[in-house]
Structures are given as structure tokens and as C-alpha cells.
Image (cartoon, helix red, strand yellow):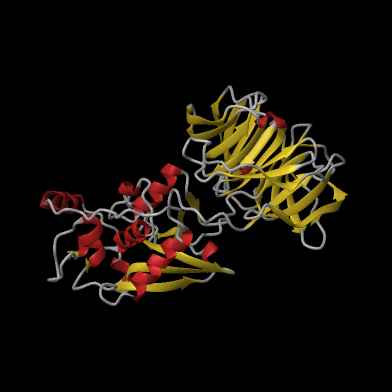
Length: 443
């Protein structure tokens, strides 16, 4: 079938017909905990398996039969589908996740490619295309026609195998009527690519670098890079010669060269970094206006800026990479009572903070008055005066002894702190910044 017909399983009547067939869907075998390498290994295996890496007729596939018990077709045992209602890209991607060891909430993945985005949004593992660096084993979803009237906008899904420079490499089912390896240059600006979902519970993905900006007590900017896998500093701290020209109160990093900082006078500034390599240089801060009395700021990397002032949590939409005042919209009061000492974001619409009593609390924000919270730790975190996260369950916590520590939360969205690793010391001293913020959603 042609590329334009590689559509998700959309027809309600067809879905009902499948349910009524009574064909048993194969069950997942017992598996070890999933890893990035185990998922990619399965995708590679299927790519090279000439006995089933193709379709027979129209949309008759091995994966449709195995994952959803679609009607038998093609005269091949265990195969299912046949007809335009049985596009099998989602069946292939789900099969790869299952065989790679994914079990958590796997039943929520259906024959529609759309379900991969929905799964990620529900469990905090969705990343919109942009600053996020896709990880091996992620599901990448596409919307080719970008038709706003589509009930299910996502048209296709594949499995990420690697990223090199600006090129994304994938293995996808139902591409050219087969399982195929593909690549996409400049993927972060490719409008066909909508975003990425990571399977819940995947390990081995804590890899990469955390870009950390800070401010000093005399108003200068700092930049440091930490290897998240080892917790060791690999670059900096670089300290700017220039000062910001105002006294900073709260800060949130938007991306690798854009920071929002509030002043003690209640104004919001955008700081554009020119270079942070051999030296740290930034342009004159852009004044975005007054009324920003927030004590804490955090950006989730997916268009949502959170701020707390006098215990009131607000959420704003950021609609540009380097926002002007007009690009900060939808000022929404989420609720009162957010008396946090620190604040960071761990994913799209997820925030994390500590209290003066020592609790570590995770929040999932849905909208005004609509949020849930989980206490990950009930005590001992009162010693930290800054909390920051580059994503993927990596937390950095700063003490007033000028020390920085790294923690790893295997699943930051499960409402439990039992899977948070013990502290790794990044540096026992030297972190003299008064504010710190990491580039979000960067792992």
C-alpha cells in the first residue's frame, strides 16, 4: 500500500468486528526489565527476519495477528488483518516493545498509532518534537496531513534506534508494505514528526548531559555541564564577565540558549546566551514586562511555564523558542497552597518540589483546580535549597554548603519514591550560585 494509506486503525465498526471474532490475542512471555538496548535489539531482529517482515496482500501482517488477534489472512498461521482497516504500524511497534520487555500499561496501546501519544501523555513519558533528544527504543509518531478535523491525528508510528547529529534513525512497520529502516534529517524541525513516547519502566536510558545555568550573588550568569550517567562535571562552571543588570529572584531555562529570569522588582527578563563554550556571553536581557512576583519558576520543555507566588501556582503557555511578552499566554491559576521551597519540572505537565518540612512531592497538573500529587519522600529533603531536573528521572539537589548531588528516579511518574537511588555527589563544594536551573526535557 502507498505511504499515504499507512493510517491508523480508525474504523469503530471494524474494531467491533474484531472484538466479536473471539480470536485470542497472544500473551507476552515473561521478560526481564526492559532496556533501551533490548527494544532496539528486537526491532533489528524483526527488520532482518525475512519470514515475517512484510505484509501479504493489503495489511495482512504477522504483527496484527500476534498483538490484536485480527482475522486470519493470507493463508499464514498466526497472521492477521487484511483490508484498509488493518494498518499495522502500531501492531509492529507494540510487538517490539512487548518483546523488548515492556509490560507497564502495555494494554493501553491499541491498533491506532494515536494510542502511543495518548499513552505517553497519560504516564508522563510524552515529548513533543523540539528540544527533546529522542532515546533508543522511543516510539516516534507522525502526522502527515496535519488535518485539524481528524478525530485521531496521528497517522503512523515507528521505533527510534538512534540519533546522530540532527538525524533520527528508526525501524518502522507498514512502511513500503514491510518492516524498514528509515532516517530523517533535521528531525527536530520536521513538521511530520509530532513527538516521542518512552515506554514506562525502560532502564538504561539515563544517559546524556545536563546543561545547568545559574546566577551568582553579584548578578552574573554561570553555565555547567554534568554527565547524568556518572554524575560528574564535564564542562565549567563558566562564569560571565557581564552582569545581568538586575537582582535575580527566580529562573527557568527554556532551552540550550534561552533563560527566563525574574527580578526582585517583579519584572521578567529573557536572557539569550550567545556562547557557553570557552566563555559565557549573553545579550542584554530583554525586559518582558512587570507583574512577575514569582518566588519560583520551572519550565517543562513542552510549552508550559509554571510559577509560584505566595503559594499560588500558575501555568502559562510559551509559544515561541525565544518568547516576547505576547508569546507568554493563558495565565491560569492552578490552585493555592503550593508552599514549596524548591521547584522543577520532570516532564510535560509534571512538577516536583520540596517543602521546608523535608517532603519531596511530585505533581501532575491537568488544569485549573485539576491536579494530583504524590509524596515521594516525607522527610530529609529540607536540606536542599534548589532542585533541578533535565528529565528522564534525573534530579539534582543543591545544599547551602555549596554542594550538588544527583539522584535517579527509575519511574518519576509512578507516585513512589522507593525507586529513587541514593545520592551521588557531583561536587562537595564550589556550587556558590544563588539560583540554578537545568535545560528541561533534554534526556
